[in-house]
Amino acid sequence: MRPPLMIFAAGLGTRMRPLTDNRPKPLIKVAGRTLLDRALHAGRGAGVSRIVVNSHYLGDQIRVHLAGQDVAISDESDLLLDTGGGLRRALPLLGEGPVMTLNPDVIWTGPNPLIALCDAWDERMDALLMLVPVQRATARLGGGDFDMDEAGRITRRGDYVFAGAHIIRPERLSGISDQVFSLNRIWDVLISEGRAFGVVHPGGWCDVGRPDAIPLAEDLLDG
Image (cartoon, rainbow, N blue to C red):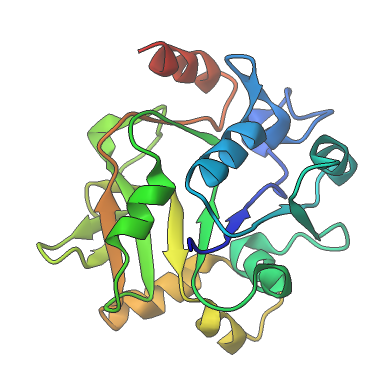
């Protein structure tokens, strides 16, 4: 059975303004389909055991959109918790064991990235990040995030971009005292221990973080 999936849908969508002035970014449409629905499709296509979506900004719209679907909502309406804090709050809904996470504000072509993560996951790993070479990262601003050695272990700063999907063993989350924190803090610990790995997505990828990236994503989907 595949691990459960956490979809991060709580952010403010600041870079996507003015489109996010009156709707959350996951409900922005690309080629006629919302980013959230595309993420849900990826999860279901991978056969995940359960799906949890967090919500904060305009969260009522997220809840209405998901009504009647077999998706649990982790409510962050009281406080936006960032990726690490948000994942930790959702753990009772996700259950025990490794968890997959997915950012909905990206477009993928090619193999399902969640299936690829599951196929590459092994006991050496406490985190496995899906990566894209920076030269293939459509609409990405700036350089890469990580380097990767021949065994797949990652280090900071290199020619690979974090593509917005990963698997993580969540036990380390309990060691962070802050309520609001990024998963980057956990990754840094795992990198120092040689327990963080990467796998490269062979297909297309687009960062749909700004309005001008939407036509680029649609071009990518058109092939």
